[in-house]
Amino acid sequence: MQAPSVEKRNIWTVIGASSAGTLIEWYDFYIFGSLATILAKSFFPQGNPTVALLSTLATFATGFVVRPFGAIFFGRIGDLVGRKHAFLVTLLIMGFSTMAIGILPTYEQVGMLAPILLLLLRLLQGLALGGEYGGAAIYVAEHAPAKSRGFYTSFIQTTATLGLFVSLGVVLFCRLQLGEQRFAAWGWRLPFLVSIVLVVFSYLIRRKLQESPAFLELKNSGKSSRTPIRDSFGNRENLRLVLIALVGATMGQGVVWYTGQFYALYYMQTVLMIDFVKANQVVAVALLCGTPFFVIFGALSDRIGRKRLMMTGCLLAVVGWIPIYQDMTRAATAGPDGGPDMLRLTLLVFVQVLFVTLVYGPIAAFLVEMFPTRIRYTSMSLPYHIGNGVFGGLVPFVGTWAVKVFDDRLAGLYYPMAVASITLIVGLVFLRDRHGTELE
Image (cartoon, rainbow, N blue to C red; front, side, top):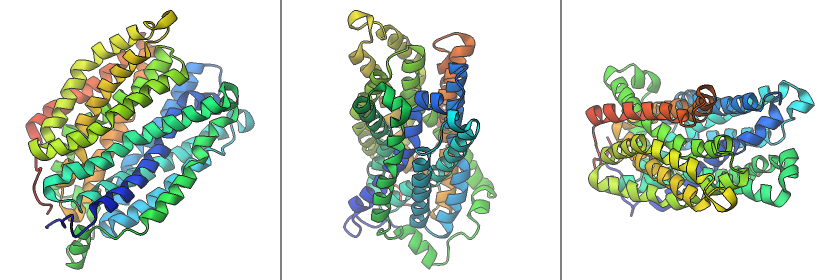
């Protein structure tokens, strides 16, 4: 099926509307992680601060674990009804659940009901995001020319990191304006509440979009799938592609993503005991500097292939994490008066973000090209969200737990190193690069 040319479709309008919504959804999803150390004090008993933090991280992780279920549910809607309808619904669910966290009562007010309600809303966030990303990435890819699909879809890829960057920026702004005590008491609610305004604005933009031309042509010809779940996972050949996509691509990409950004933040706060504001500033600056490389590597993948870049990112992460985190430990006390060396820490996190951009910049185009149009939403979304939601989303929890249990500052890296190594081996053997080909 021939993708429409840029002249026939305003690809930048499509990218702008899709990216705006995806950025806001990622912001909503990651604002929870940005405030994990503060939420632990508000929603869990404080007899043991470590247990409270691990409980918060476990709640944070449930949003990732449930994402594959959202991928199946909304993926089916996307393949049956259309891409646009699916990601309009996910946007509204995400907005409601995020806003509701901002008005939840605390543990001191309602006891165990507080963490239960927090968990339920986190599950809704995970379900919504499970259906959002695949729809937005496919929507852009099905509008884009084959020869520059990696370039155009890479703008969707920037929204995950930009969402984290914006969440950190909003948290820092509120924290600096309100002061530590007022922010810890009630100011942490503001980043959650403000998201509803952003969601409504994005919804009004997205509702004006037309359906994906590739999907419309398929549906008008009567060739769309009536049973996308069965066609995706009941067909042996397509199931094989799903498993290869998971083990050989998204699993490793997920742990590289969350180690280089979220675990780096938690490591500075909970292991190196760097001040909340300074740790967030380090990560925010590193993300801002690294974000353009999503587009650079996305465009490069159109020329030299997606697989080569993704496997390079996994290899560099496996080899580089130990020395990077060793140097982060030294940098934590290498600054003036024995404090953190902010520039050095920022550069070390920036290097990790570069690893992220290598694996994440090309992967949307790569996954879209793996699967046929009639079942693309369902087939692509599941391995992506298992790789990111389960394997990647557990990195902060497993890493923080491993450091405490094994009394080893670097123990948190062994899990992501093992997962990325498996992806590197499987990907080199089984992945097939289809860059530059027309979508079926």
